[in-house]
Amino acid sequence: MLQSNGNETIQNQLKAILIRAYEMARDAERHPDWIRKCQVISDIDFLLFSILRATIQVKSGLHFLQHLDQVLEQQVASSTWFDANESERRARMVMAVTPFFNKLLQKEISDQGVNHLKDFNELDDYDCVAYDGHFMKRACHVKNAPGAKNKANAGYIFGTDLRTGFLEPVKVVSDGSKKESEIPYFKDFCEDQRVSSWCRNKKITVYDRAMSSAGFLIDEMKKKHYLVTRSKKNSTWDKMEKLQWDKNDPSNTNVLKDFLVTKKLKRKNEKLRLIVYYDVERQKTYRFLTTLSTDIPPGLIAELYRRRWQFEKAFDNTKNDLGEIKAWGTSIPSMKIQMCSIVSAYNIIRSFNELNLVRNPDMVHPAQIKQEKRTDKLRNSLADSAQKINPLRLAGNLRRLSRKTVSSIQNAILRETPIRELLRWLYKELKPRVLT
Image (cartoon, rainbow, N blue to C red; front, side):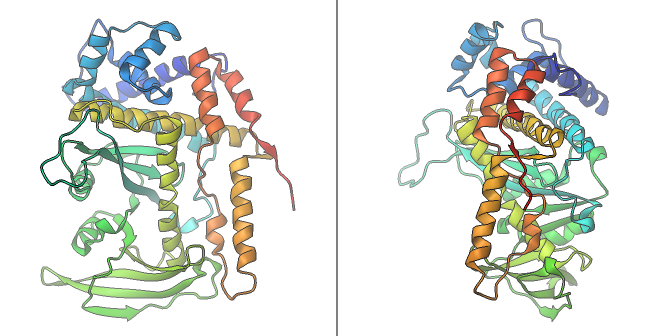
């Protein structure tokens, strides 16, 4: 869709995708309560403008409206715009449409062969997603209670698909009025999965050790939802049994131990896996907890968690390149709209980045060259020791979107550049692949 008509602008193509996603979201519910016609600013236009606001680096809503008027020649009254951003009905609409919009984009690049986990056959039947909290400054000054040391931040939980690098909106955690824990919000999300018809039969979720409750892991496993997390230091087990694993398999490089641990929960003995792994880059030993069976090698489980750390690269893009360091509003509806808009903006840029690489298989991005040099440096530093790099880390890694890629798409929006011309800009960023 993004490349079907190279003469179209990004705005026109996005509007066409949004119309389709809106229809899919409407048809997915029997009587959606978020549908309402507005003569001043339609839902489709509101969705499009919200995504453009998150894509173009602006300092405020008024700053964006000035861009909209003077650069894109589309006028929206400030009162209309800010009222819409605080509307609960608009927030429900955005939350309903966004998953379909992002899945349409994701399907397009998947059909083009983008799959950063394609070398791991053991994961073919799974969706693999990492989750983490993402916090920013609140929209206005918050007076803390007497004696409070830290100000509360506004924030959400985001997910990233480890196959495509796409972000996923999960839950608003806080509007910044008070501090909130991510855990209950993530558990609520697990109970209310959206767009389930797009999912595979099984799902692997990677989360930090805040989600290492054995009871929660077991309950989710019964729904074919398998978690990978880090074990807390104070975790105790009723029984630990050593498992046999293939020490000659290169994918298990740096695995130290693999245990089947037993925990008594509600008078039943529940079993999980505990994997001890040594990270040669960080020079640190980690303990990973999971409900995955022994069909998945322990080294691959450790690699899935390592790829969760790459999530920070997406946050770096949204904060530094898209300028999303402050909440758009002080209400939960405005936070939901911003969360979905940031995700959609990032995924649009990720789509063009991935399509650029697919269209030019003999070229590489400078970010990949930089990563390969860093890996070679690490390998050379380990040459005189018995330590080795796990080869899994070299297979299909997600890379940070470059500042040049983000700027090219921002400029294409502001200049209303045809997609064909944008793809030429992106091609210029690539370097010839040097065979060694």
